[in-house]
Image 1 (cartoon, one colour):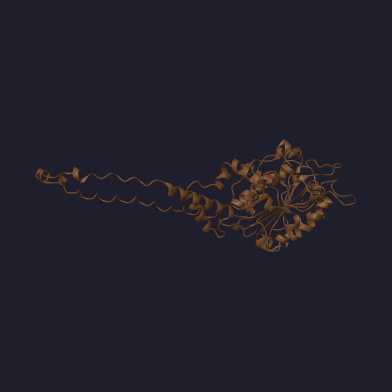
Image 2: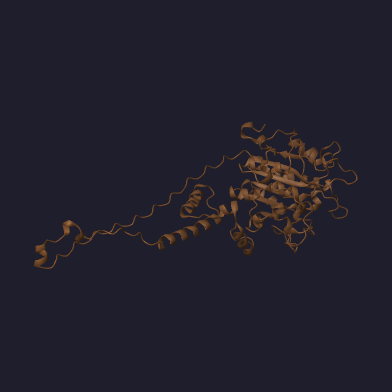
Length: 430
């Protein structure tokens, strides 16, 4: 992570407001803790991150100065030789001349040097699981039957991809709007009135720096994440990273079809203020390059098209197919690139998850939140169906389970089901 990425004022404000878990990740309070950070970093194959190295260096300098400035330990007084019986002069000596000079006092014992701090042993790292690269593609659903039924409006998804993977036939959304589902899938936070309404005021939908996300967890575990968003440009039309609205502004689509409502990372100050969003939340055009080699592919990749290509009706230019046809065409282009990548072939999992619902208003489904999803991986049996009830919290919980991370928010609920067990190393991919 770039230590100085992001606006300096935001970083300073974030530092002032850090508490709780995020604070404990960034601050060590003693020389022992500092040495521990260094020791853990040196035992880790990837070493210290720039932020950790800077923090450790500063703390070491402060502790060294404090030790140097501390007053010397006082030495206990020794009794005077003249005060002991052996040293008392006789009467004859007192009358015959001056007393002999007292014997020199013994030298004070030097203060013991402080013991060198012992670095705490590094915590054993969790064994890497069979899945080390997860790709989550989010589009809008036309309804379960319109996507997976016999008269599917998404032929690539239902006829091309679904036979290669597992259909989650009982996957449902928390709301038909995209933002509540996206936020739940990366943080475990529940939908709010503002997120359901599409954020009439951007700042009303944001979360304080203490609220952590899956992206924060990946950074803390020394894993990499990326969000890829189609059409994400700055005010001049130039591709840019982590594009967010002004605090008081409404979240509205840009001319290129990008909308922050499809980018859940853009609503967390833990990512925006500390620079992770600016570094890892990037335009979709960067995905192809990152897929070329396994070591340039992030452990977690979140992929979202523009409003048009996500399948939202009425968002495409005139004369261009929209709705499920546009979403299916996007999947037919991007998914094969993922499936052909070295990272996917080695230890990958693709999740095609509907992050919103936009069914045909002329023929609305009975339950628009029942949308289904597809999992594809070299480690699953193709053509299978899983009828367990899943939702966006399940997506988060499953990814956390795959990477041995603690569940965030409502993903930790007792009723939240995880599909990570299907990828247990002991099942041999069955």
